[in-house]
Image (cartoon, rainbow, N blue to C red; front, side):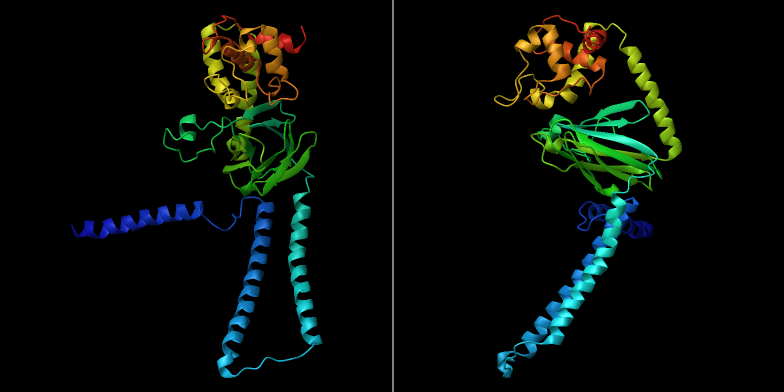
Length: 376
């Protein structure tokens, strides 16, 4: 009994301390230090400037409050009357100049490091789309899309929100630890910005322009970020997840990913049944198309057209293939030919032509998509 009386409060305090620590981390007001040399340098500069500001603030307010107290009217204080003081002017010119130098030296050093992408051990091309990211491992023949996977029920408040609400993706960017990685960042439609605070990386993704940055991630772990440039309706729905693995685990992951790519290419030669295409098409549609056209195919009136009963989804198959693969200039309809596999493209088109009462009975096979891409 005595043990329980002593042990229970101790355990309660321990759990409370853990919860408070987690909340403190979640609601921390200071910027995180991060896990790269660049993020550490940025943090150090931030703290140097912060403490300089604290010292200046304390000094200024101390003098101000002392003056208000020691030279108050009730004590008969009389204001001094003078025109200039050369010594004072020199002091308040020299001190700020020295402070600027103290801040400028580490800031300039860090800025030079940020732009030094030389001697990178691997290259990742990052392409922003509305509203997802594409990652390409240059020289490895591996590429995939990374899209939000938070269920609509959570977004529309019909289900409890998970721990990583709006921070869950279909595939994370996987990187090796202790490796200098160069990021080549661009966009296909509008301006986005790839931002992962723990990596010390925030770089705009601009159509027609490739920006460079890099990271040397010292600690394995999962790091999350988001698009930091307002890019349209789904701006809040394009999170970033970076999974950093020890080099041995990364190499194993990459080998497995290459096997999946090869298997996907073989799968494109298969002839699928309608049921198989509909099942895969529904999943792929909800990942890539539902944000605009709606999970019910009704779109958003006046903004994004519906597909339910539409001329595209019930008309000529070739026209349907063309708009999905090549997009439509001057509209928000993207070209998905370079984003999705032939299997997913075939499944999506088949799904759109047979869902929501469209019921055309048309099947589009992966080989049909491949031949269309090749102009056959």
